[in-house]
Image (cartoon, rainbow, N blue to C red; front, top):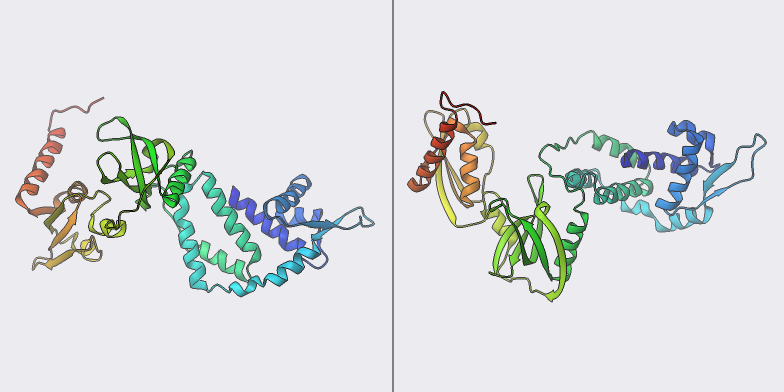
Length: 339
């Protein structure tokens, strides 16, 4: 909805920027709207873009011509915005980043992003809009795995503020593993996206441990006046590289056999920073991972069903076998579905 409005505003500004200006009738025709909506567009341009619009005396037929304020146009030419001169790859990169903002769909943050891009559209050089239309057709962003952050804008804002000012926060957090809501103090160190969700790396004050917390599970947050120092030996990017998922715990080395059917899929991707692939004569392959986060690794192995077999280490292989046995028990003949 917001994007459609921005497009209408840009089209209206294009008409107003003509040397002869434009009329309400011309705006209605160009934007396919009625007169009441056209007047609203004029108001939006002045309030959203801070662009002054002048109007001439009525024409013989009663129509009034509207045009951009001459002083505004003069100032605009002095700014020399054409010097921005973004290349097509740079524009492409901007819209790739914008596409990942789907995390904020339905929030005030999304509106701010759309408003910013709408304003950029107005000030870019001639022909730029055509490139934007081409770019938009290149991207299809899947939303089915994206979490809903509607109503979490204040939480995100406070986390960002605490990070920038290095202030300790008091939060209430819902833990799925315990099913309880706990209250504790954190030092927010890093905000990052993972598989359609927002997470923070935070130092828990009570035990001085670094943990990964899901933003949507924070039910309340308040900033204290207590300052914290960023730990010098903490490198969140390096930790995430070493972790298989987002859970960082004790290091683990695993060796997995993948069937010939899955071998091409496994081979074309890099699953973690430290990995080795050994091709087998029958078309299968052995993948060795040296990473952390056994819980995420185990889930991943099990997701391949019979096409993946954990070979080493023996204790983890036993855990996988026990999990498969528990799953198989759910499907034994004669068992009725629960509920």
